[in-house]
Amino acid sequence: MPSDDFVVTPWHVEGDIDYEKLIKRFGTGKISAQLLARITRITGEDHFMLRRGVFFSHREMDRILDDYEKGNKFFLYTGRGPSGRTHIGHLVPWVFAKWLQEKFDTNMYFQLTDDEKFFSKHNLTLEDTKKFALENALDFIALGFDPKKTKIIINTSNIQALYPIAAQVAKKINFSNTKATFGFTNETNLGMIFYTSLQSAPCFIEDKPVLIPLGVDQDPHFRLTRDIAPKIGRPKPALLHNIMIPALEGPGGKMSASDGDGTVFTTDAPDVVKKKINRHAFSGGRPDLEQHRRLGGNPDIDVSFQYLRIFFEPDDDKLKTIYDDYKSGEMLSGELKAILIEKMNNFLATHQKNREKARDRVDEFLFENK
Ligand code: TRP
Image (cartoon, rainbow, N blue to C red):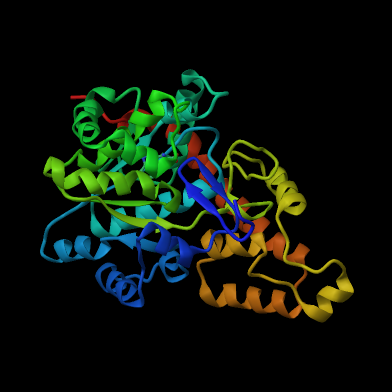
């Protein structure tokens, strides 16, 4: 990888991502001021994740809105590869998906790909990934989805429902397409090669168009799905992409659920959260107090500030005050971190209660094979 470059694929994210360049590389559309205004008009709310470019790119969101305004409904779909415990960054697109579901009053499917993570991670058994899938499901349910409109698909449990659709998809994607898309080699296992068909299947689970809020790293799967959709007589999935949520240690790469210290898990206790942020959150501050006061900090690279921007401080005025104070040197890195720690721990206190309550409700959400 050249030093000024970056990699974004479903299984590998590396480098400092230039999102403008990524839009060009992937051939997606930027969420324009016009599209933003249209979403605001229809939903009656200017969501901060759209306004701040956390969701920054799309494919055919305009078509979904055209149809919606004509009275034609769509449904929502997103998912998670259960390779470990849920961390804070995973919740970003799920919280946004819930907002979409409420505003557009749609059904929603959440796919947990225990098979995918078994295929892609050499150190995980299928039992491990299934266990993580059920743990991750608790975090999803804890966000307050309505079980009447929301179903959780676990690939190995729901294969009976997925397989007939996956077979339609698989017949239309050839090896050279997936190979070019993902860089597969002769050593790649067959599970990985077939896998896109399974991630595509929920796109066609209802007889309506689908809108998928997702991390931009997942776009390549749905590029393939979109290419073959007309060949199986189905509408192309529309997409809304979010940026990769930075790891605590710093920009470049997404939060990884595999390394413990630099990651805040949804089950972490308040003192653990405090310790992780104080020790590991990449700081935009200066090396010493004198310089910080004189020159100011850099909120644009400071991970604590980014977490406030992306998730924990929806109020623009409050966020701007923090930005200005940090940049002028009036606010110190420790003070900025303290703001984030408090917000995160408040959020987690509620989330952890709801997560425990969710244990008894999992069955209401699990997709039933017909
Ligand atoms: N492959 C995704 C991951 O590793 C999980 C996933 C399945 C997904 N279906 C999806 C993500 C649909 C976004 C949208 O996280």
